[in-house]
Image 1 (cartoon, rainbow, N blue to C red):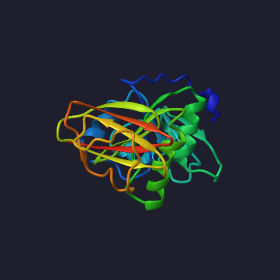
Image 2: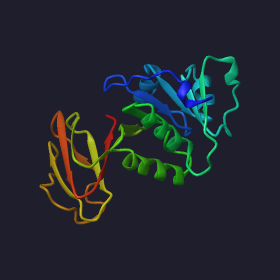
Image 3: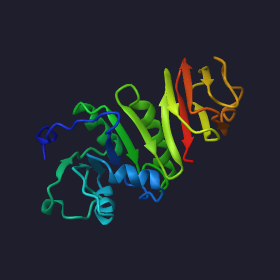
Length: 217
């Protein structure tokens, strides 16, 4: 189906588009709640089978369609067949979201099956960070890419890890036990397992990008 035939999808901060990738289906209440409350669910290829098996109906299925087994023709589901083998189904889906003017996206099912897919999916956070307000939610936490300044709602005691993606990146934090004051980290692991001490934290980044991992409570 021509992607242009899909009706306009509206996304907001409080009602983002939810993208289900073809990793393991989540078991934690937080990603499950996001899936079940999604106004718009987009599945990457074979993830459509997992959604349907768990009582969820995608609005759109996107990919090269080499994995999906369900008969989508029997459902009111838009199918966007993108045959290219030069990128993954998740990258195809996120690029399609950009082209459709969708700007708030939550990705679920992006980790846990293949290490190479997990790593590249985390890198896609950075790749699309300037085009989408995007986060990955797993059974363990929520992952963001920050390259300017972002504030997060947290609970005191919640674990927060910062992983720099650039050598000379400078980081400033507030609301955490171990603060960074516009400084570079001494080692790539220095930012692991920090602790939120307030109901909000902030991360300001200069000269690069940082992955922010906020563990579920």
